Image (tube, rainbow, N blue to C red; front, side, top):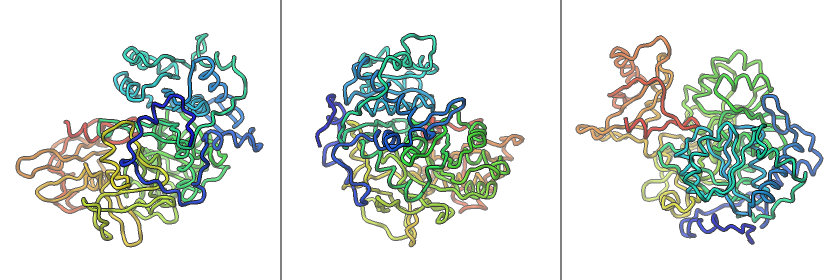
Length: 536
């Protein structure tokens, strides 16, 4: 396929062919043309087909139609190419909370043939410096509220030659002022289906994030697999959620998926449970994307949520405890849609809809993908046996010039790092991340299983479990617990929790050490950072 990228940085840093996963395009809807710009299918198509006046994005104090979003994105694409010198293939760092303007910037970059590098709002200068260096970003578009850390990072990144701020009304050089000088329409760059349009950084649960490369065809592929076959939303749905657009869970759930079907999305710059509840109520949201921790907090609003328009609830980003699923169903009357996906494969590849959900199971393989549970030698395991999860489909891992590619892709399969089992009905069960398995006195203990037991104790609000070195047992199970208000983290509580866990799961799995914290260390996407717990 002829690439439109004049800057060949991304293509030059693709993994070598022998380390590429095998890609599957077995579904008819996954057979893409050689030339493809995903902005056409997600945005421009709706305007061309007469849906330009349909509401696309809602936010506090703002409503944008599909026509509005197209106009803003087209003007940004003109600014990038005419005033800032962007050529196809350049990387553009995007820094903003979830907002209509961030969505417009994302589409503006893609339309111009650039590569979007959207960053978590909570990243500090040192972290941004790593992103700028790895991606070699030449351009950046930044919300004024988040400018300081980026400016500090940019001092050590001379390759960043163009930085424009937005949401800064008093700045004559702001992006909005430049947009007003530009024409209304932009002709999308005729990119190849296998041109990179997105660099997504892993969320850093291991402390060492990696840049994953995704093509234009990948963006459309994830819209045609899980959403179409499992979520099954409609154009009348209103999406809402907490994950940032810099997190592929949020990019898919709050931008790509709703726009792919002509629906609308609510973008909140703050989406803690309190703001999320207000958004569900105030915007009439019907489809919710958030993490298990948020669902536990929102369950307290069960009676009010029963009276809302909410009808579909998606959980991903971290393991869904069976107790959280039960709590949510009891509080709201709604069954959750669970799913497992990775930044490397862009979105969800194992899931089950509400009708086929089973407590304790993630679900079955999403159409378009294949998945297996194998042993260390790569041999498929029988039903019920715990092993390594490996997946292949229309998307797959492409780390940007990273030696860790060889560990993720083996024999054409993506090895996700999850320890799973699959039952006789084809339902996959998550046990732990492979690096979260604790080997204590010869026993294999899955940290999430111990966490699930602790969460059933009425005094426990949150918890994280890790293995710590121990001279006698090899590793010791240690729990870090956040207590609910009114409970004391004393020796009596330690004994109470240990006794409780022994009654819920096999006694050898109980936490022999317990520490109490005010809060657990989490990434900006809400994932537990076990490496920080292990570091003490």
